[in-house]
Image (cartoon, rainbow, N blue to C red; front, side, top):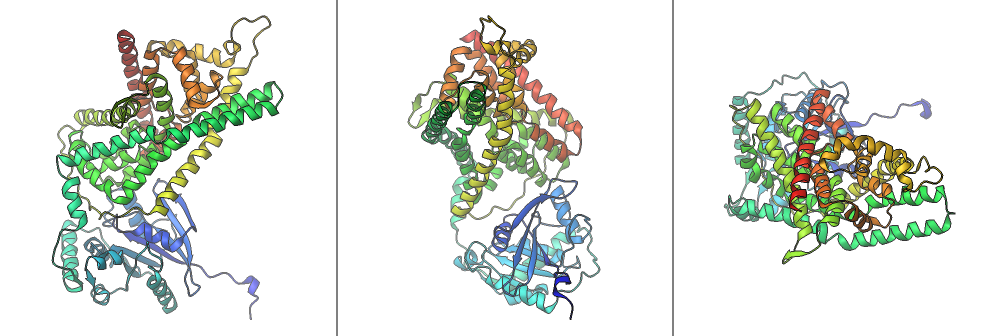
Length: 625
């Protein structure tokens, strides 16, 4: 009998989930793996992979990989290339698969069955999971799972990923298949399907559905009735505009009480630390550098969470695909594919995931254009800068019932980002692709579903944690650097000017000011823009440190309003609409495009736009004020 301590543990069974977008694949992955997940990128591309560990009731260990969504292995985009290569076993950086689990939406089986027919030739053991079976039954749809299994020649199991016990049958099927022994991968005779092959598989899927699925007499579902209004060519865009407008009004109105509470907490913390520490350089470092710098950015967390809450709820509701459909005509006039709307909308939260999600666009040049204009969308990192400057220079008054002037200006800034992105795309199309006709937008509209409170809360927590971690690392470090530059060297004996005028920060700011003076920037702004390249919101911490202001956003806003002209404030706001003040975004552009050339093109055109627009804004505002 061998020594137990020297036995090699059994290798986990490797399962990969594959399915069309919006089939509930990721929800099923989360239900199977729980919190035991890790996220990474495949080597050479920034296509995210999620891998989780799980254990079946029969004590079999599983390694489950959530593959990017796809309708086919034809591989028209980078994420579909990854899915194809893993399924076919040609990627060196991915473990070979023991079982391929196809996830199909029970209310819309056609894409899943068509994909199952195509995957039959890939040489892997297959398992079809008919997900969201509860919704199908609620609608009176009856699915004969045994007939599906007989027609496809593979096991078929029903599941409800979002309900307790909804995956019990699936766990039992895992144990049955593993104990029976999964066959080795057989020789693959898969070839990239032609249009005729796809049509043939669709007809076969329709034939199987006709034999295995019973549907009630057609009646308009709730989703269809809601879509009659939300997708109306006149009412739909108006409703979308109102939703976006409400979002930005809420960013100001809803966040104000919590922001005031955080500001008061930061002030109390600064006062307490000042009393505990003796006067001198250490007190200045902690209070003026760390607390004032980091606190001036943390105070904007409620606004960022409100923005993310809107986006997460709209995604869970199923409205995002409708928004893409509504925007398709506008995007087409700008020379963009309708699918570009989703990456651009994602960029409202952060340009980095927006740029990465552009890989859902099939056409390489459309994908490149989307990547290059995504940083123009108003990301959450701009919110602290916009809020500070709007609070300083825009009166806090109402211009109508429930309509605040500050919220209206914030909405206008977000709209300016969208319009500028579309204009850049339009000019690019006119210069390089004038005679091309954009491909039509084809996508499945998922049924409306109530948002899962747990999922929204988890999403908000992840984003709050990421923001606070950023505040505790990048922003903290930048605040300390700005404090050092603003403090040293000390003024000479007998100096009559403020101490900061003798510092390294003043020297650096005066060195850069001649370049930015035509757009109205002071030397203090020049100093704040430098660490702001690491992250846009760091500029707020930089201004707080340079002006030695504590007490949060309101105190800093009053200081800026007293020392800057309105023209300077407007010029800086316009600068942030266009300027590429985020090194992480530039790095992702380089990785996604595979070339530094496109990164430098983005840097060049965005800085040029920022300078020209700020120059015009400064001189027009100065002439009118």
